[in-house]
Structures are given as structure tokens and as C-alpha cells.
Length: 109
Length: 109
Image (cartoon, rainbow over all chains, first blue to last red; front, side, top):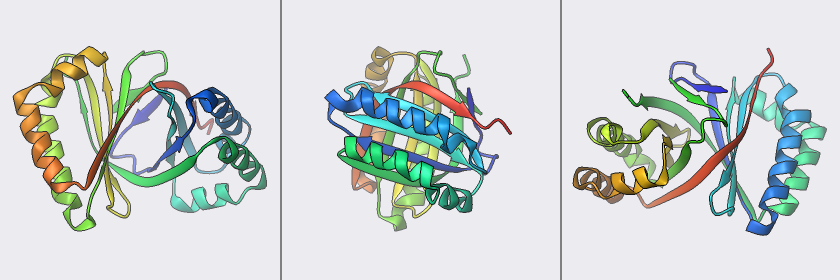
């Protein structure tokens, strides 16, 4: 489980992979393997949350990091790069966007 | 605070508004107002989580709903539509993608 808290001050990356639906499950497997084996052990990693689009045209990570410097260091890691290259070979397009979480609203039910 | 849990079975919508950075704060204000006044009171609403991109070129909601039927009913609500039209007038493009959350990883620190 992951907690979203606007006061935590994490860097959020929403990283969207566009993919042929026939390759979506394989892509997700590669990305989850890379998260387990490499990314999640890097300094400053807070969370990764892997999503499959209902129509399987996108595989998307909602990720939290301590800082942008930690993200830069992770991206320079050879093991991480190897997994990302494998994922890039399956995806049509990769779009990472860096955010800050500004406000959360929960059901009062 | 919001919790992401792959076992919860929620429908996740990541809704990305592309925007002129000069209009990004106004767009976010309109969207937060619409969430407070309308969307968050609709049946099946679980959470909304509003993000501002570091470069202010995107404003993005990570939203959780009980079901797609609840989302359809929300989108048909006149008050919700009025707020969305105001947001559409400020944004260059709106891309909602429907997902299921498959796996979460947390730091072991």
C-alpha cells in the first residue's frame, strides 16, 4: 500500500508507456521485474505503483521519490538502464512527467 | 491522505490536462473548486489527488472511483459538466485514461 500526502513533499513521477495491447502484459512484467530487482533498492525510492490501462494501450507508473537528485542517480545506474532499454523495446512511447502533489480529497462516506 | 492498494479494486483515472504554463495555476484552482463543490460529493467517489507538473505544462488528477458506472453518472451531472467546460477553456488538451492498479512497491527503509 502507498500513501499520497501533499505534505510529504515527495517528487512524483507519472511515467506513461504507450504500447500495443498485445505486448502490454509482457511490458508490465519487465517493468515490475526492474522495479523489484533494481529501482526499489535505490536511495531515495519511496514507492512505485504499476497500472494497466483498461484497454491495455498504456502501462503507467505512479512513483514517489525523495528528491530529483535521487532520480538522476537512479537513471544513471547500469542495471536500471538495462531494464529500461528492455521496456523501451516493447513500448511505442515513454512519457515521464515530474509533479508535486498539491491537494487530496477523500470521500466522506 | 489517499491510500493506493492493488486489492481495493477501484477504478483509477489519471486525467492529464496539457496547459500553457501561464494558465496552469488558474486551471488547477478551477479543477480543485469543481472537485470540492461537485465531484467529491458524487456516489462512488473515493479520492481525487491534484498534481502540478514541475514545469507547469500539465495539471493531473489521480482519481479513484468505486466503478465505471459511478464515473458515467458523475460525468452526466450538469454541475460537474459546467466546471469541466470551464477547465476545458483553459486547457489545451485533456486526456483521461482508465486503469487498474496492479502492483505497489514501497521502500523498505
